[in-house]
Length: 270
Image (cartoon, rainbow, N blue to C red; front, side):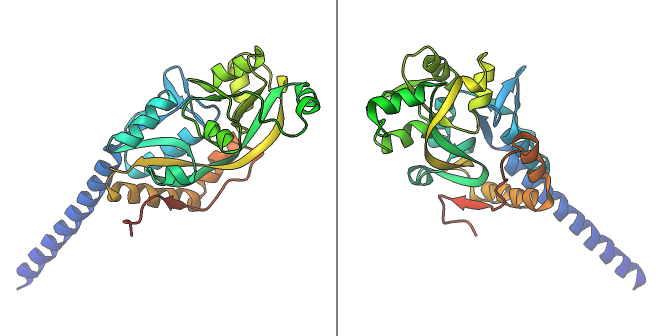
């Protein structure tokens, strides 16, 4: 009788161990089935010697460590990553600015950071622009990088003459070369973009804030709900545990980290 009880206890222990291993493997498999893309948008994300770095990159890497994922983060042009997250299964793109239109196209998880969408011009030029047209600057050409939410925001605000290029770095150079007078961009990244192209942050000045922009992780609609739920649980843990706030403080010391966790764009998750 005693031998039978011991055997049953051992069997139960083995079953519990196997269940735990299965759950861990399942979470790891779920995390690793994603193709993960980001863009060159410092200091939020960028490539350095072939490796992804930046504030949001560190957040995603911390989430991957929690999930047991070793998938590489690929730094690609925004248009390429955006096309992939719209058309392909099992894709995650970060960071994506929140909008009603995008909530219908992807599943969004965050926010990871918050930035202002603002118009910038060359230093000393804001007074000249307002003197010519007052506060209505919509007749001026605005530079924005292709497929970005910044171009969309400017268009919604009535700026119809929009000159687009592949990256914000090209647009910044075009502004400084006087190809146009206004540049629409996230205020969070303007100093880093200017530094990367060899210019000082004070060579441009902010003219007008158009909108506040929450930045999210975006998952393609064809990503299984179990994968998204695993990432959501990991983000909740990361924000509660304190690692997220430390990463945010490291990269964005003058901004308050958003501590809520919001999922947008789907209704089929528990």
